[in-house]
Length: 144
Image (cartoon, rainbow, N blue to C red; front, top):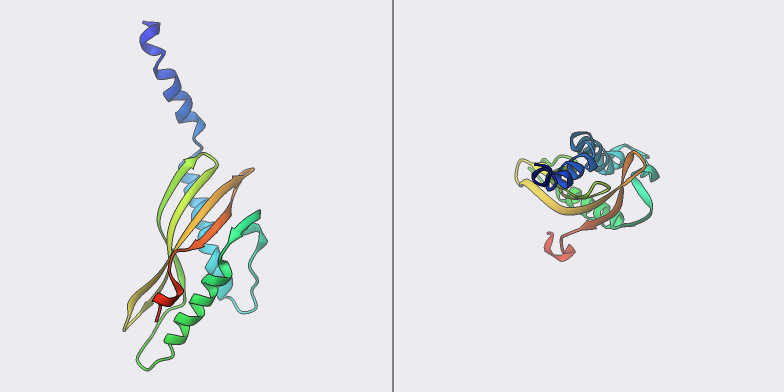
């Protein structure tokens, strides 16, 4: 009987080793949402608490693309919202590392939606999640 139960032990350990994914997903969603939300406030600076100390980030490139898209909103009849980070998927690689596929999205009356795909590598430091890497997955020349 013990021999039949023995293979189940690693599965039980693996289940308990993974953190509370619901709480982790909520924390990751708050961090990813704050990346763009913090920049839309006048005079706001990017919070260093969002990124790890050794983060590899293309955040400046993302802001440049946002500025280009907002310039398009000045065209006649083009009502475009401010940028909003929309999470498409969160995949936990380990209990301390997650990959987040997201899109920096602008909605408008003429364009409906324009998306800039972004990949986040999230790392859990202590009890909180931070961005270890931010990659913009679009060629700058492909945007209007």
